[in-house]
Image (cartoon, rainbow, N blue to C red; front, side):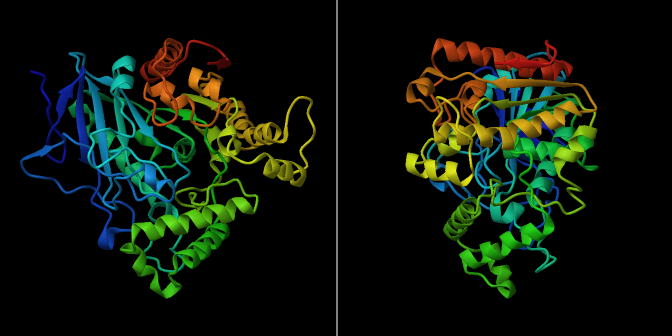
Length: 440
């Protein structure tokens, strides 16, 4: 029988084995960020006695929007999952996934309280790439990225980023117990998760904790300066109905109130024409010294960085044509033969938010860098006319429909196999088998 008992620096953990993978689910990498520890940087977990059962994943972080799709949420959310191929090979490469979701939604936990299904099921990915894969939660929206420190210093900034650092530290120090190579750790993430990677690449505490990076569709410039972050805080407090001298109420306020206030804040930001995420990391001079787009190019870690062909289609596909026509006039979009207002707007936003910043980073990057553009559409996406949109590569990469698209057709399987081979090769060697840019 496959051995699923491991000994970490905090105690023993008993996982489960299935489908050629050893699973260790719901492993604590920090103390629960509740009570006096809420809105503060995470602390290491307490060592435990006996054997910790890691047979089922935990809750996702409290959501800022889209909470209907993330039914299992809790403030006690700082847990990780380990997916280890059942092999006699020792010291496998390690890949740590940082999910996206506008710093406001997402997670690595359960999809439903009555199900064992995971938001990110990495069994197939780990098996095909022959790597140990780690997923983890970090605090979102109000608790992860709202700047309340100027009101009350006990409310610290950028907690979500510090959660990520804590998870990476746990991995670096303990992944050897799971059969991983603690000297070969690749961090990979998409959208907000990818932007966080750019911030962590030059952070003095985070940078020593990983060796390579894969950055997928990063919202590169979605960061607030101090003044902007305070404006967002004042708006959020107004929407949630908490005054400055009552911020302590936020530690226990109802999750539904968080969702509704965050939804209003998002609408306010977007209605003003700002394409940044309503909750974004704060350039505080400490955690983040400057915009990561300016700092990341000075890093020398091997980097694989890419974008999706029509990222912004995700944000405009459901917008009525008349509103897109108004937006085209407001933003003075140039006419293009054969392209309507919606397509022109999506092209402009894709270029401004994703492609141009990515090119600026990779063209000035100090270390070895490979770039790609994802252009593939599954048959289901093609038939819908949605185009190659932001996050549409994830179901193909992970062989999991994720509520986005079916990937069980031969064409998608073939594309997914190719992507997993590229990602796996990079994790093993820090190289890709091509020069310049690759189209997937």
